[in-house]
Length: 432
Image (cartoon, rainbow, N blue to C red; front, side):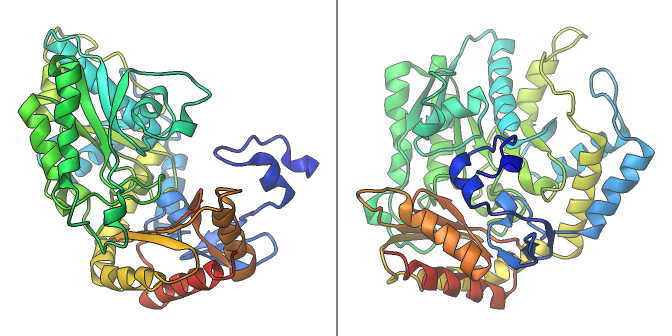
């Protein structure tokens, strides 16, 4: 292990393995990262699902620099700065339905924990003591204790205990859905598992149902057609709040500004992060309906919600977000997804007959190529593909065990899409 790498305890990384053969990035511009030795690596992961407009956007960097020179920080407790209010209003104009009240955080993890607190505070304001949450198997909602608990990834919990009380809906990745193009036609009835959970635990005890629109970290799990609508209807039937996690799907990943428009289903609270600043400065938010907001703030004229963060609505993050939204608008970035998502889908499914491929899933600019695991070493094939892509082919992909995820910046062109999947297919065919 290199001694100069030892001090940094890396997140979600096999630290010893990485430091013996590090994958290092030194700079970035457009669709590419550049390594310390000068190799240009095509980014097929948008950094970590966040650099939707590509890298090195001077408009965003300039906005951050100007704001830092004018005012580097302003407290958000009992004080405010105009840009945070302007950004909140702008986001409220973009969100679907009555999601008009923005509580700023610094990440998706904080946004989910905030959304869960808003649900609890809402019930408290109505004299109800609901404390149970419903998540979903294979869900990922960050690493706070709330998000970890409603998430459905066992490895994220095994070292930390039970966390917040939560039960889980079944995931939506069945064998009969394999190799679906876009939304699987079967499986909407999986949303009806909520009926059984309510029968067992009682609707009066459930604070909210929390799910991702499209689970990303577990391997791009596409919801069946009409599944999200059915889940919304079931929540309404039982009088339950619905929280949608749009940390990955927000800001054009599927082709619409938010998946709420793409699937025509509006939750009571939604969470955002990542693409809101193009990854340039950490920022997230929980965005709530008017009903939830006014119920919580309608009490005595004092602090209504004892929750927040030192950096909520940070001036530099707000400046980055405003500039990012300008880029999305001025360059019609989301239109590029709509015009090329059929090509993206076709290229992804051209890998169907590659070695060890057992499933391909896609929607918008999200795709997963799942490999059969090595019975003696699960995850080996995925790691070999990751390393061969990076070191031998100058391509950065994302792996989760033996699932390879592709989620490029939304400014990718057709030639680059074809290159990504052709290269990935060639690499997969070299792995035993």
